[in-house]
Image 1 (tube, rainbow, N blue to C red):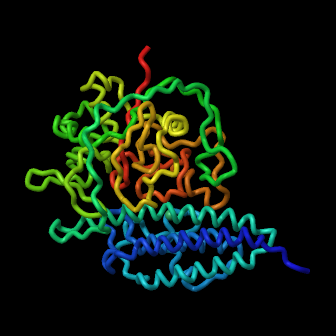
Image 2: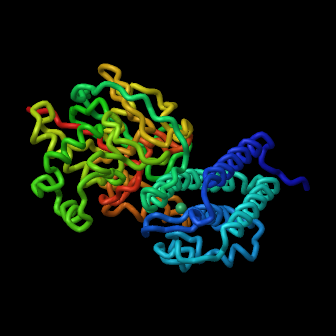
Length: 441
Ligand SMILES: [Fe+2]
């Protein structure tokens, strides 16, 4: 009896997407030295070798294994090292030890990638009609997972390269500086009358389980700032004692300020009285009109409180809720979703706002924007089945939601309904600040 296989055109499309995303992960590591592949300066910053290995392990464990794909000895040998947080899939190397091991070598990991790639292609060729939709579903998750790790790679290598003494530091890329612009006036407030609206992903396109289900929610009227907070505005907070005033901070945030001796965003450096920042294209003078980047939720929240208390035109300023943010992105954004700001532009740094009167800018691919919302399930949330239930659902505990994508997010990885999440103290991601406020009675 003839075997029914996946239609040729469908298979070609999936294979092309798989190859393109897999190749991009290797290509982005090309500028690295052998040492840079191995370093893990802090627990949350994984070394690039691990990123390359873990994303391959993900396909081996979550796509090949459940569908009877070919196994190799490396699948077993590397399982302990490359499992990130899937407790249901077995024992794991502690997260903070990824920079402590010398085996597998980086070349062994690159060979493992090729082996996994070849076996995924074999499975795509041979899968029968009964299992082809499951293969398609799991491959889509593997591809999206790999794109998440591509964004992580840029944030991690930025942190790794920043550890070197200043005279020895080497940039990841050589990018031209952006043209500076005249300082804008205060950010205008853009009004939304809210209402009973629907939130979450709609339609047949792909999304994570945490973007579902589409659900109604009543949003009171609100205002949202037309652009992100700039370095100039954040510098005023620094200079006027923002980091020295406990009244501006949540208790956990103030503990971070004291314990880490925080006095400015991550990567801001004072060199002989001049402020510089570390970027993926090296050290550069702080450009005051660029959006302030690499701030924690606590810094964003304290800044909003300071802004509200200090300036009449910002009275009531706070961070937006994730649903306020989502509605503004759908209804009020000035730039199309296919904006040049994402990783595809290869700027690797957030761009200056280009204001359009009456609309909201920098909603797509500038910086991830902290929201006031805790990361919680939408009503009726159902996690992915099996081990992949661990992907998103178990982190819905004491983290905050970020929206917007960033300059290191692959464009085709992002949607307005995308829910990123990090613990509140996180600073090494490309995170920025958008203000909102409720309407006064
Ligand atoms: Fe992962």
